[in-house]
Length: 263
Image 1 (tube, one colour):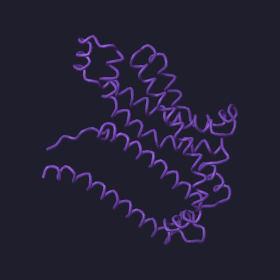
Image 2: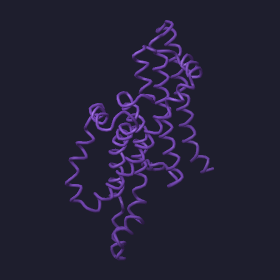
Image 3: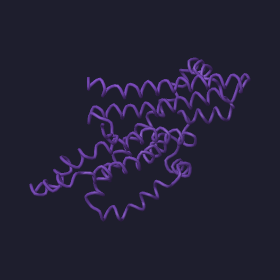
Image 4: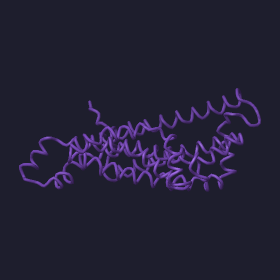
């Protein structure tokens, strides 16, 4: 009985979310047909988008492949550097004090200002896209990892100190297990950001990918292609989020959300 009550709220939330999405799509369909008429409307209804995507699936599949490669590569590089840097910051506070302002400044730089420089330095290809995706991934994962590594219980750390444990043992057996929910929270934010970074980089620094197709559609005033690429980007970002969610469930068995008090 208690198990059924425990499972009921998540199922109910999913059904409500699905119902909200279906209602939103229905309202979009009706509003687009009533208030935005025309052969090539600026806001096409969902049914038109589905038909267009089905008709041009080959083009979209070819375009999405470079974006996936750049987003995954940049995500893995940015996340790895962030976690390693977070460990260094926690182990050596003086290093964090020296580099903290530089990290914040790097995060504050707009991507559109960096991309032209990367194209000049590395040329048109995968390198600028991967770097931008890595930069988009870097700060959310670093922030989550830092918070997580500092969230360990004081009593557990004192016990490891009493047992004369090496700092590497304390890191692997105490700090990292406590930090995993925070790290995954940062990864779930960073996965869609990596897709966004790779797509934005393709506007300037690439001749292929979803970002390049978005620019081509804009120049040709191909509204259905523009919307189809936008939908593909959104689905790609959502897929990345769901994959991190699945890995999180397999690793720690629960979502990285604050626990609610039960009645």
